Image (cartoon, rainbow, N blue to C red; front, side, top):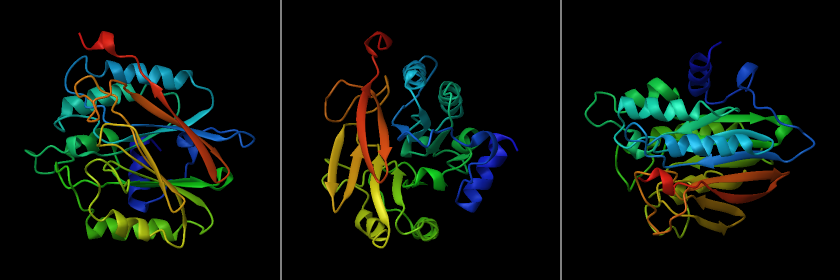
Length: 270
C-alpha cells in the first residue's frame, strides 16, 4: 500500500492503524517524542527553505517518532505552494501528519482543498498505538479562508466517533489549526467550549494549534492548550516576537514536557 492509499484509507476510517512503513518507530522504554510545527506559509520558490532547515533540525533530534504540521502549509492554497511544502517536509526521516489551515484553501477552485488534498491526502485523522498509551486526533477547524471559525456539525459528528473509539483512561492530544486556548489573544474557535466538552468523559490532556503566530501556553481543568510561533519567512508573529520554530513534546505516561525550538532564519529573509 503506498502512502496516498494508506492515508486516504485512514482518513475514511478515521483511525490510522499505523501498520507497515507508516508506523512510527519508538522505543517503549523511552518517552514518546514528537514535534508540532505550524504556519509555514510557503509562497514561492525559496520560501520553503526555512521549512527545510526546520526539517534538518528535527532530524537531528533523538528519538522523534513523528511530526504534526498544524496548518497553513501555504499562503493562497496554490498548487505550487503545496508542492514546495511537501518537497521540504518529505525530508523528514519519520512520518508526518497534517491538518489544513485557512491559507491551504484555494478559493477560486471548485473544491478549495483540491491542491492540499493532492499532496497531503487527508484533512482529519486519528492515530494511536496501544503500546504508546496515547491517542492523537487531527481535526480540520477551517471555514474556507476565514480567521474566525465555527467547526461545522459534520466534523463534530466525526470527532465524536473518534472520541468514542478511545479508551476512556487513554490520554488524548488534539490538533487543529485555529486556537482553542481559553485566553488566546485572538482567533479562538467559536465553539471551542462545545468541542472540549465532548471529551468530558475522556482524558483530553493536550490541545495543539497554530493560526495565532505566537507562543501561548495555558492550562485549564487539566488540559494544556498550546499555540506556536510560525515557521515562515513570508509572515511574522502576531505577538511581534522574532523567533520562528517548532515545539518538541516528550510524553511520559499521561504527563508530558515540551520545549520551543528556534529555527535561525535571519539569513533567509534577504
